[in-house]
Image 1: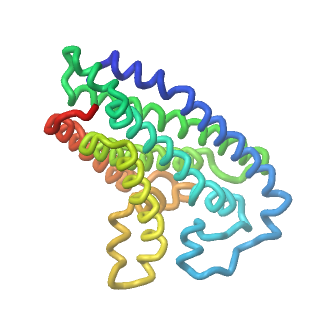
Image 2: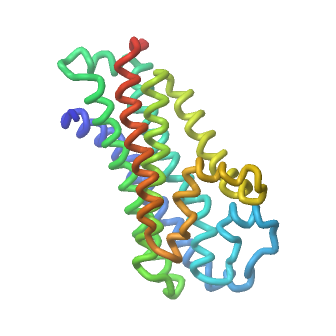
Length: 260
């Protein structure tokens, strides 16, 4: 991995990652502040099972259910996934379309080393947002009156980070293979959205229940980290997928001519 390339990539995305982390903190503080006023009155929504699963169980009667549904089910993965996907696509295919990547590679730097540096920089951005999420969870739960163990809040943040690693690596592989930023963002985002829907609805249909194992959301939330803590096996699957996709990105970018 090229350390100078890694440092530059981190610097270019640092402000946006910090802003996303700060936004998560503010949102989580507001979510925590709202629970004493409205959480108990909403209770558990009477929804079809698949829809309820998409909303993290739709149980707003407890603080754990409140944060699971408000943050863990949709908003958290949305923010961290968007951060990872846009950073991965922008720092590779985006720079290629602008002609920057060709200039960088005019120096004695292997393409695979460049991709690894970009992947590491994306991971740093994901960790910044995950850290902001953890700070916001701790503060939000405190504002709401407490009741969720610190270990479980940490587990949710860690699972979010590994989810971000995986979808970011997918975007990186697509960007390295096509050289097109729009394609990488669109396909990676579509996969994440489809995975979200499949994870909620596939278990309701016996013949396609196996599809949930192809969704990153299954490994992110099947153990319910905010209630049950970290699941090492699920994290191992997400990490393995991220590493394989990063290796694929390093191979693909070496096998084609750069655009621009």
